[in-house]
View (cartoon, rainbow, N blue to C red):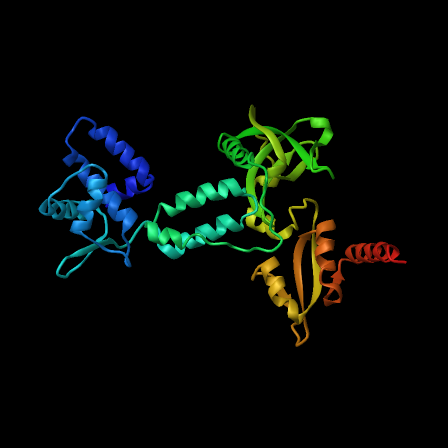
Length: 350
């Protein structure tokens, strides 16, 4: 079983390439065992068992001849190796792979996650799904050809994001700073570097997945505090030979707690906020703040919460989404910002 787990992480094709190299110059009988495993893994499942004669026919495709008795011995050997081969007794016994590293519902979940993820490009999505399909039979793979429809999700066009993530992790693991250029898009959909292409040098501490985007959470000396950067907006990311700064901000840093306090990764000062919501928004509130959020004054038509939030334009925008179904109770500074924003919006329509 341990041996199977070790090799199970490789792709089947890669495993057999190794096998062919290992067996080069030896008899086909040595390769037969590996090809039987390949046939069982690729072409069988609970709904598609095969007989020994079908295994023999499949082996002929690879230029290998075999006798029926030797197939039985090989199947027993593969079972001993750890492969979960199920036998259906009958006039002609049938065989299929039972449990695998991943069950079909798990693979469907992975495919759905890949397809609906905005930061994974269409090209990379296709590559990943093709690899996922190799973890099940060819018949099960057909059921993975799913079209997940996620409203308002647009696939990222930046292939560099995978390289960026890798370099950021390297910087974190090696306790070194990284540098990169940061950009926005123009109305012509072209890249425009901030600060005329000047490099940002930061101390990376974590990567966070928020609102369908990857963000780097880092200490930025220029602002003397924590800053967040969209990973797909970073170019020419490099690890530099300079140790990360160890700051008090990261001494007891809790990324989950931090992510719950911010909206769209807007960094700033944390404030205690009290809000009153219409009862119909309970699911929205729990999705946004989690089940640990403090809820009080629960009545039939409304409820109140108290939580710490980093107040910024994105948080104000989130509040405006719910119109008269949410009311700010405190602090007064937030009430003032809401009034000012409301007046500005009204002026646009006068």
